[in-house]
Image (cartoon, rainbow, N blue to C red; front, top):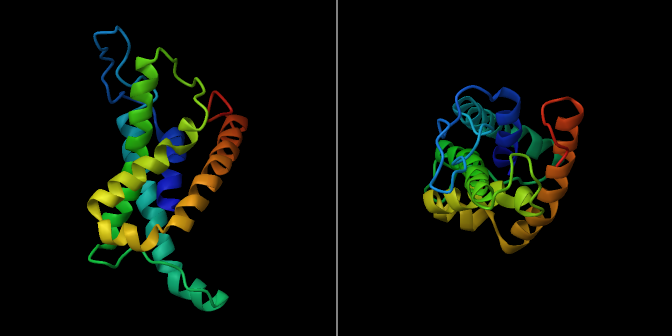
Length: 175
């Protein structure tokens, strides 16, 4: 899940610039996504997610041998490593954008808290993109137990990283 976890943080770190929605509003008078979703953040987040996945791939065999543990790879079941990594990373960001779209429709401001949805939107986006593009790999690696673990761990990791982002000045809110 690391290639899906890192893109949102890196989008916040490297983001800024032109918003994806171009400042456009919908018929309800609200922005489509808002200023927090930028092209630079989107591309930086995807690149960082893919790079982290490639690093994991490079370390897979040495770490597996060192710890005498078998770790899953980002390929197999007819899927290539790059497709899996791009699906996890881009799905993560698109899941977050999808949530932002609906938060705007609900009249929520940028940064407003939506408990659990804020902590799991990127997970669901990553899973949907990866399932659609790499079904066999997804089914082989995301067993019921793995999915439960991700759903339990992700909110805790999300809150921790957001507090850190807030403390170092990258985020305006600690959630």
